[in-house]
Length: 192
Image (cartoon, rainbow, N blue to C red; front, side, top):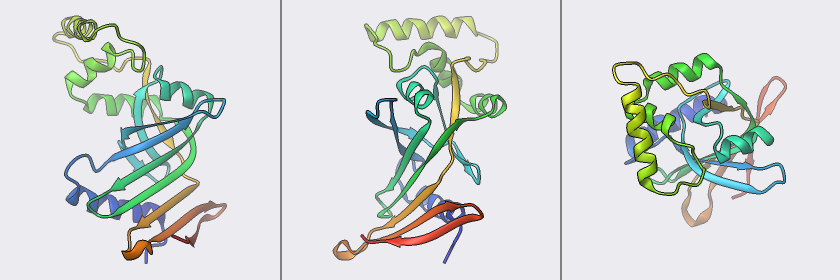
């Protein structure tokens, strides 16, 4: 049995890549504002290692604002085809400028331009306004690399709890909980 939650996560993610029809790296991201009002949305995991789980966004978006005011989050991966889920909780911090630049450079040009064109989470009067802005930016950056917008970067969730849930017959599920300890991880089971 694997006793390292990061190694177990990588094993489960590899299996999800083979079985999930779309976006095995999709995860629900739960945040809360300063008053505790929760909000959840789907985002894509763009990296993970011993330091944590990384996603990218517009820093002026609702999630960016919530994380600035309350830098804690929960993640949920649900792989229906495998009948598994993983829950992750912990503090959130920014990725380095170098990490954000490196990831932004891997995005398609259209996605890069979209990051410039979008005031993510802000009201939009018509779709045409966004499309016009996108077209203007496409012309502006014609023949050039598209730099990362200053308001666009990534966050890393540093896990303090990771729960692995396996579906079992008759709702007799298996739940393994890893909790960060000073010298690594402690592991236990939870009732289904």
